[in-house]
Length: 195
Image (tube, rainbow, N blue to C red; front, side):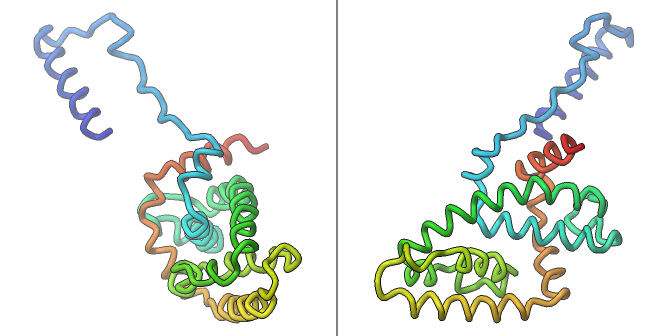
């Protein structure tokens, strides 16, 4: 994108120089650039994992709670903007969690051995994994999974309760990818469409 803009700017400079500094009367020279295409909710769901959605939510929560953190991600997002972006993010979360619950219910032990589940304290995602486990129904799990399920629930609940504001801030600072992401574009659009 930056390369394209540089080429367009260079082309315009050359046209301007070759026409003796005269302005062109064509609309092509004055037309604004088309806005970046915003992905659909389905495309966003497929592209971003539960951990990535959670990382964005954590960063937006930190910004919403403290307006001094508006440049935390490397781009300016005010606390009000962060708060409005959380509404469309919640819809993404709800759908993603339903999908994750199905995966957990089919194999609680296998799911709990995944890297994200095990390292949730490092990336501030124990709370969202706890939401997955809490939403799961033992009736839908394979027989003999009850003990594993209860152990997972207790372990995640304890880890989620230990997450401090400092840990949330540390995790939020790592989300520099968010500013230029399709997720941000999607959330910006969703926030601007809210009443």
